[in-house]
Image (cartoon, rainbow, N blue to C red; front, side, top):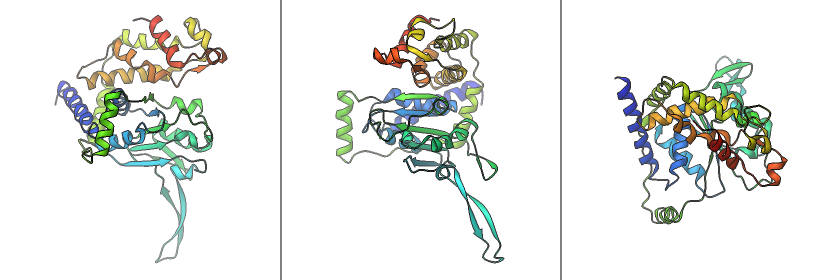
Length: 327
């Protein structure tokens, strides 16, 4: 199979996945696109939205269309790191009566992890995911263990109910490729949601892609060529956020305490390459990069007191950056 056939196959698989997810999820096309880009780019996604917008259902639907193992971790204040990574247990051989420690794998040992309400657990427990998300490994009992491939973390958090929550540290946020915002559906979609969920006619999603195909598509993304002007534009966009640098735009100097690091530019390029492939194109252009600036940057920018006083949000600052940093 040549490269053009592989690209066509990836585009067709993407279409089939969206069609199956649509059996359970009405609308939210942009959210689904961003989740799938993160999946095939080998990244992780943080979904943010108020209760009742089907964040958990969306993630479980995505897992159902893939032949991958799936675990859900409900983050609570009393959750311990070992509840995520696993722990050693003392086991006795029934024949020899010899006792030895055996590592019992935690729920993180799966292909797709739903970290539900990740901001409801203390930073110590949140940090249990750091090594897993960055290196696809877990260190426990003095031994480093590989996680299954592919490994994809989808975390959710509620932006309005802050009592009893722990804000994610910057190092944790930076591990997520995208911060995906889920908004209320429009009127027509909400009518369709009510009709489909109250009539008993909803059909479950079917599996349409295998583990081997997901790994092959992730490998295909790494081989996509990128023009120099596309890479330079991604770097320019990221450097424009750094308030203390000469390349920062005026809005960054005025409203940001800290800008994005190099990982943001890496994710912009990886995401742009993936988006191009999902649309059947062999290489990305600057519009692919610009389309992904909001989900890549919004959780990497730290606003200052001036921004809070004037109610200038991160997405508005990103709009200023896109308007000023042109291709």
